Image (tube, rainbow, N blue to C red):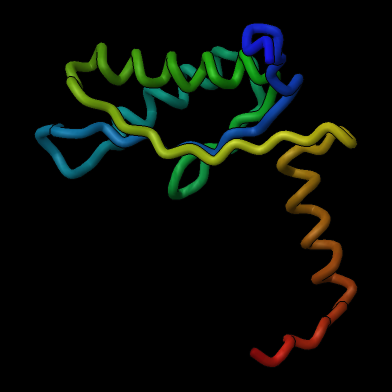
Length: 119
């Protein structure tokens, strides 16, 4: 196998939670705001939620913006930054995070109920 010839998926979404470690305060709102500024400047589609942010785009751009988020938090004097990430990619069709949510909301709106199976 030629490892160097394996391509990355063309597009992905990443749901990530960046955690500054060892700050003087329990609040990390300032660091989160700085990360959101980086995401805004990237031009990528993103959605902040209470426990992180979902970012969509090309694999390389998404991974780069997560790395840049780490860098700006380090520049604030945080010596250690941890991120947990879930990464999704699809090759059969283009699908945004919004599409995924809309699909479930549509099912709920129709009132479809599938009985739960007994354990």
